[in-house]
Image (cartoon, rainbow, N blue to C red; front, side, top):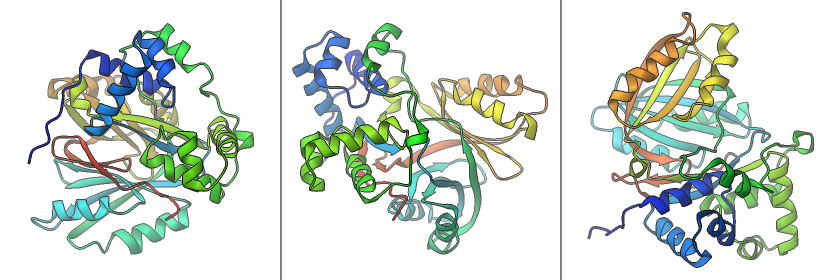
Length: 337
């Protein structure tokens, strides 16, 4: 039986934008920013999450020591759906996207270090039934973060909402995650807004201990949060991936610049001839060529090696995505699995 879902209206988009600014803001804070009651905000958010239209997950912060790679996969005829599902079931595969072009899909893969990443790619994922061939592009530097803006709330409202939410991290206080850190991260994978009470009950710790550890991890940049939603509902109907050849001396400057563009979702320096990997969310196909022209205008030395249109997202940072782009489940991303 088909699931009946309500649409997303302007107040929903404003709420999602506010949660991009501060994913764990209280309903009272959100209501004050949006000029709505806390009860109304809570009701809206529960509906969005129930419908799979929006969700919040924990994510590694810039100080968390991890290794990652872009995995391009060519599948045996008729096997792309099965391969995508098998990859999505793996907790160290963060995202899976079916694409047009030479490769049938690409996946973003994470592990706690390069040795574990290599073992996963060579012994864990390559033998997946239905995989014909693969290309691995290790990520050398990730320029993009987990926070995007929709522009639905003004800068003053965003500034007010972000008060107390760490934007600048004290990386000197970062360290290798321990068992408590990992358990906290995993619990928040399923629900990034899980209350301190529920976290304490789930982890067998006191509420003050959970709050202290959560505050510490977010302040030092080990842990962050990402707010996601059904993007076509906000007018972004096209998702593309680009592989760019950038002169080495311009790579990091170019990566940092593109990461700041509002269309950009992932921007990473990768090992390979095409050394910059970019994914972008666009309003429609007509917006692709202006984006490519903008990239070419950055430097005559930049070449666009490949471009692929995402035909379907199967997994997006742990969330299993249905054919209508709504979340239908979760396989938490676990770099330490």
